[in-house]
Length: 75
Length: 161
Image 1: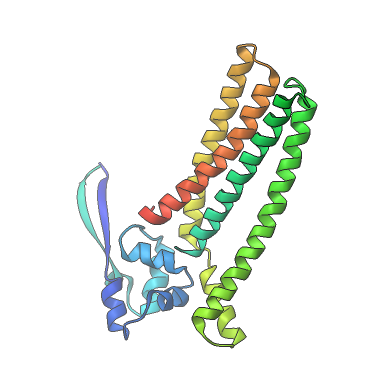
Image 2 (image 1 turned 90 degrees about the vertical axis):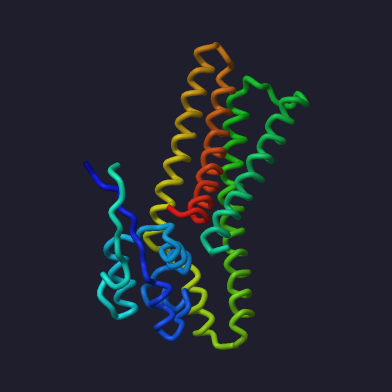
């Protein structure tokens, strides 16, 4: 049976360690809107693999450092 | 409020205005006796006119909205550098995968309502209602469907997808 997974992220922490990069700056670097950065950071939107790579690339870190997942209950 | 939310809100506002204007005009004409309720030609002509007005008004409103957005960005940036302002405006208007997903999801709801309106229109014919009833239900369901789609877009932007 499929497991429900929860995707967590370290975007806020990574922004802090990137000279307190603003959401707008991250959005510009990744080529997405600030609205999307806000939603991903708040866990309201799970990005596609492509977008996840773009965000990781904007920080210059591997994708696993930005996103992680927690296994949940069966669906 | 993001650019996309504002854009959707303005489109919804225009949609409501056009819908209200149509109802006031078309049913006002029928009530005053200037047009017959069974006159399909009158309703189809009125609907086409209002669709045209809607498209023209939407274009004008979007142009005005972009001008207002550019001015507000220029004021925020507090500089006269056109390149910087242009870049900031572009950054505001970026459309990415989340926007597309929201558009798709809210569009589905809009289409469902339009479909429901079509079924409701067919049912009115089954009950021997005048064809003008069906035509009006169809027209109004298009309006309501697009409004519901817009409302869902704003909901998804606020609550997440």
